Amino acid sequence: MKEYIPVLKRTQLFSGVGENEIEAMLSCLQAKLCTYEKGGYVLREGERIENIMVLVRGKLHIQRDDYWGNRSIISMIDVGEMFGEAYAAPESGPLLNDVLAVEDSDVIFFDVKRIITVCPTACRFHSIAVQNLFFAISEKNRKLVQKLGYMSKRTTREKLIAYLSEEAKRQSSSAFSIPFNRQQLADFLSVDRSAMSNELCKMRDEGLLEFEKNRFMLH
Amino acid sequence: MKEYIPVLKRTQLFSGVGENEIEAMLSCLQAKLCTYEKGGYVLREGERIENIMVLVRGKLHIQRDDYWGNRSIISMIDVGEMFGEAYAAPESGPLLNDVLAVEDSDVIFFDVKRIITVCPTACRFHSIAVQNLFFAISEKNRKLVQKLGYMSKRTTREKLIAYLSEEAKRQSSSAFSIPFNRQQLADFLSVDRSAMSNELCKMRDEGLLEFEKNRFMLH
DNA sequence: TCGTTTCTGTTGTAAAAACAACCGACTTGT
DNA sequence: ACAAGTCGGTTGTTTTTACAACAGAAACGA
Image 1 (cartoon, rainbow over the protein chains, first blue to last red):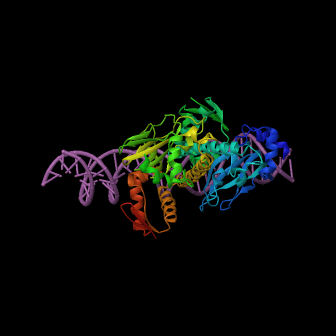
Image 2: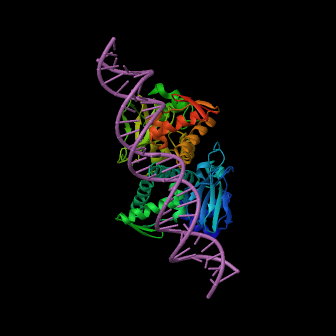
Image 3: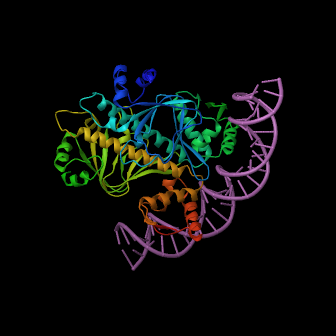
């Protein structure tokens, strides 16, 4: 697990904490490292968790399949990102989504209670960690609202424009890559893949944008 | 402002804090009371805030209108609920939505920095407040994911079923009221009102449910 | 290398939603 | 009490989507 300390140092959770302190906190927070193969489930809907997780290798999707098999990708987790904070509160119910490894991945689990319960004697970084946790979840909250923004658009075209222009703004360039293939993008925006593909091509023919694989350029 | 201390005591933010302590914290946190008339804006998109707000009288909608005038109701705030926590982090950008009073309302503003910055001398409830804040935002996060669940449904009927059955579960009864009129429900689910009204009546005719005004009963 | 799988685009059809327009019932304010 | 506004339901038309099915290209694996 120690080899991932440099990765942890760059995460939001350990922002402002040195490598030595992180190493100390690893045991204090009862950190556990788990490995998953591509396609494997890290967490499943209905599970109850008492951990906060940090992805240190690979890539995950937070998603949900309904009874009719329609998949909806809630969000994407990259290396260094945290997940599960929303279920850190003691009264939070069971998980509402699956967490799936879309690449071979390593995840570190931390005991939630040990983070939010202040231990005055042990390590003095708990208060920093709680604040970091708070900032992280507040950022995730804003991202969810942003996603609600895409989803509240009525047509596939509007959803695409909302998502792509936001992504262009975020990457500060009208040419950018997205972290999804077509099926995943459709699942992310909750539309039909073929209809979306069709709409993308229409938009290209109208001169609104160009694309090649997962690389886009807006005009 | 003192007349609202009993209301504040029952909020998530002040959970576990006595009325006397709350009174002390009001000045410590530089609390300010503002009054709004029905239809007035509490906050506007693009504003930058450094406060956390608690609604102590009335009712608010957190919403967003796009360039085409389509309104989307992100969420509803009732008395005792907190809002704006997602923008408490220092790096959070400007507001992405409007906050509108749908009834005459009173709102108390708290200085964010004073909550999350621990002052060891002043009042010893800051750490409780930070934890409460964390729990509150994590709950809001779960609600947003739940709403994404409704929104990711493809058809108006599926959205209605998802929302109504969730509401029935939440109120532990197949007969329940919803806090929206038809237009607001349509805005909440991001669908056309008349199409939704039509679908509701079809569902009623098929025997799936009954309703009268904002009161529903599922079969 | 060759066969298989995955990914993307394309097309046609059926289903659904958006939109606009209208009506009657009910509220509200003066 | 009356005028104006709000609310919910209804209908018909147009637009959009979902769905199914297929084909070519690229990636992958044995």
